[in-house]
Length: 152
Image (cartoon, rainbow, N blue to C red; front, side, top):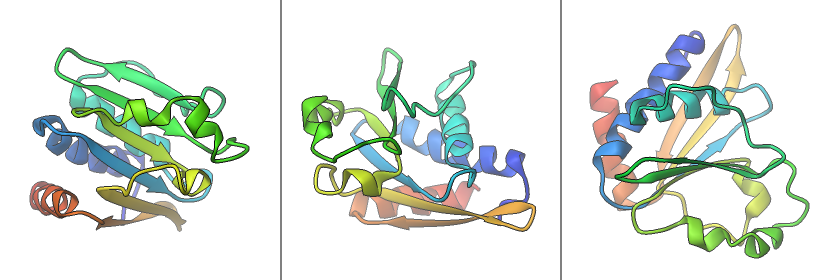
């Protein structure tokens, strides 16, 4: 249970700290209704990488790039995606480079064109807070989650 925005940011930071330490590509799906905390979680994750500015959901641009010398984080919001095939036209595969971190909001809208996520985070509003459920679909994701949960 995430009691407030600060707790949601802290979960994002804990996940970001672990992802920052990894040299390889990682894919994270963020799922949940509007207002469930997906972008807030992403803000915490980006803060762990050192981002100091605002983080907005790239609803109209589909992707926002955050680049550091050691790696890039790509924040996708597929909410307004008309057809999953549009991802091919924008070169979606290029974003999943060897060392990138790809965070995808509304991944179900890109079904069939996205890789299997290493980690999925389902968020939902619960009372005044949020309920978060983390799961891993890959061995790498399982290792990441074990370390995140140890430190969180």
